[in-house]
Length: 220
View 1 (cartoon, rainbow, N blue to C red):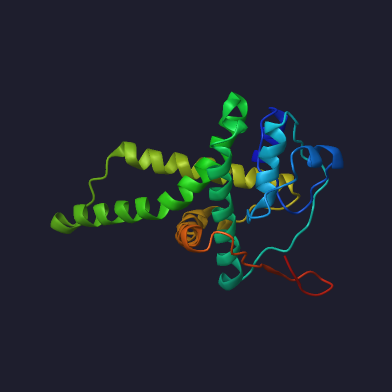
View 2: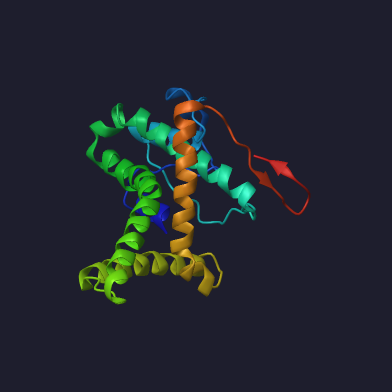
């Protein structure tokens, strides 16, 4: 949902690693990608945008098996978040932020995703504690209506976007996909904590992801 919209609006975005197609000339012009960034696809997307190139999204789907266990999922998500932090640290000091459209795209994509990954868990924990403290004296909740509306709108916007994305991908939205989002966001904060720790202690460590295609296993 997000990347096709950014491409339509002519904004930069972090490329995904599943399938990318480049002309060699522009890659050589920008010095290719950052070999020390663990999400080099995100880095090269903003490098191309800073050099004046426009990014697009191919219409055909690309297929990649997603992690199906916690041991596979956590290192992959942590690596993505760490790489996005690296990309932000580099490009917030470069040519990207000198161009308003690219700076806006950097905020809309990487900055907000990194911030939400780190903040969702603590904010939800604080909300649960506050609700428990409110409930304890008289066994009733007195949660402001504005807070409930904010939570409902935030979840609804994400759920509608997720459902629409599933339909575009010729899939069928399921209740678990939509109702499980708050839990998934909490797990993202666990991955973000791991990413922040590695960002400080092992910034260039590359945790491989085990994919299981029909023909066998491959590590990417």
